[in-house]
Amino acid sequence: MFTIRTYNHISPLGLQSLPEHTFSISEQYETPDALLLRSHTLTESDCTANLLAIARAGAGTNNVPIEHCSKQGIVVFNTPGANANAVKELVITALLLGCRGIAEGMHYVQQLDREENDADFAQQVEANKKAFKGVELKGKTLGVVGLGAIGASVASSGLDLGMNVIGFDPAISVDAAWRLPSSVTRMESLESLLQHADFITLHVPALPQTIGLLNAATLAKVKPGAVVVNFARGEIVDNHALLDAIEQGVISKYIHDFPAPELQQRDKVISMPHLGASTIEAEQNCAVMAAEQLREFLALGNITNSVNFPSTALPPSTGHRITLCNHNVPGVLSNVLSILADHQINVSDMINKSRDNIAYNILDTECIVEQDVLDAIVELDAVMKVRYLDASYE
Image: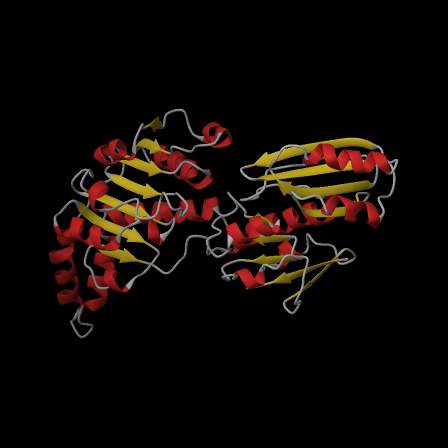
């Protein structure tokens, strides 16, 4: 039986992916095998050495101490793409808010005197609506920064709206490249995108190299009058530099869902609560994906969509399985195989993958592996964690 501690509300649809005869789920476990969460912020003390995995029902993992987890051999999962449609739809909303005086017009109407008679009220509305005239998205250039699952989806929708779409992502994956419509123009630099885009939408994670991505220097490259949309992470934009760009007329609007005191009550800033993935469907999709990834890892040792471990999967072949993670140094696997050979344990199938400083191995054996063998393996200097699994799990 595997124990899983949950934080936040996890969609019941996701929890249904974890059969009760194999997984026990509670908010009270002190030393669980795994954690399943959404926005709850974990500390290093929550991620103890006995913990096997953490699944974040969402794309961002800023609320998880990744480096500490890697040192402890804890696999951290996220759910890329599960909330892509929800975020994309909100970005489309933001683009429309950016090109038309919709929010301003709604605010104006709400402030009208309700005591006016019908004729005067209608006349006042008609006389002042010209203040909210905007432009159409069709024919404008949309610059998409970050071309992962969400960015690619936004790019495709921009094309559907009749926009010219340009994109920039220095770390685009092969899978993301395949998802990207061929009519999206790839830009060689962020500066080049900023110089050509009428609308700029951000879809990159908050990493050391992306924090403050839009700052005084990069904003100076922006095409005058551009609209900036940010439903990625607040830290990506230097708010004070952006306000200066608004004052100078470089940025015409900033639409985002990361409210901050310095952005309050600014005429050209539209702030929302953090609504990007706040749909019933997105929460369900994220919970299902996170739960399924935990199930595969805890029961079979397979890894998909980890942010710190290599993707590694092996179909069960014998019903007996060893998994181990180790520091990515030479000789570890050969030492493990020597220990198994010394105990007359034959390996029928195996896979070895590495990512940065971590290596991960799955070995199917032809017989049960006793605890003394596992103890000998974990005593090897570079080995971090070893597990024996009954890989006949369904």
